[in-house]
Length: 369
Ligand code: SF4
Image (spheres, protein in one colour):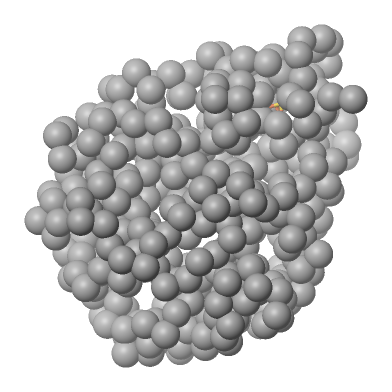
């Protein structure tokens, strides 16, 4: 599942007021797994009000208006629970969209299905590993055998010539698994490791996020990994990874972000958009405030002009220490996590331990006492 902002790389050449770097469409909430962290609280059956195939092709046609090569992530649930998944990959690919998919590690992800997706023009497949071996992964995913099926699908994808991305959820239950998962990512010849820092929504509410100090150490470790690993590393819902990277580059001395170029990073609504299974337009899958429905006005206009998306792109609208932070233009904090904890998407990100120099306003509850 990649339903959340890619929080590592600033994209200096992209005008995020005009187009998202990533457009995620949650094709369905249907899935055979019952993962502990599931934002979608996935169900065994498809919702009767899912976008139809015709509505989905209309969405893809509209997404083309964002510009050439728009990246579209087909997410879920399990996107392959929809019988039209391959057809829609082909439809988007034939029209110049860069189509990727995040299937669940279930028995439906056969080699034949992977070959079909490749032949339809799929650009990348993302699979989830939340443990370095069978027991912790299967426990997290709620499905015995999921680990082996995921590894097999990952190898099949590579044999089919598809670039592979591995997604991992970081929370108290998985943090010790990260070094072992790193080895797996290397062995699987993945191009990217996407490390998602838990936002407690959906079924994820039953999991324990790691505290801010531990998150900082994980980010420092990920930064080290990224310097030597044969794959890229990005964080998801943890944009302060960029602050950690800047501080590390500066040898520990803080530098104002303007010193490295005033670039805007991707956060919910700013370089990232999410379309739910029923067509609601959210800034991210973890920030379920709607800017409309694609059935009514497509995706492009709400992304560019809705008050919600426009205000999320205004880093000077942030409150608390994020609003006072010199890194707010390259980071901005997870708007989804701020919303999950406070009900206000403009509040401080409670996972970040950084306190700007001279700031004496309120701190998130995670940093008090
Ligand atoms: S305080 Fe907010 S804007 Fe500053 S680094 Fe932390 S999360 Fe980012």
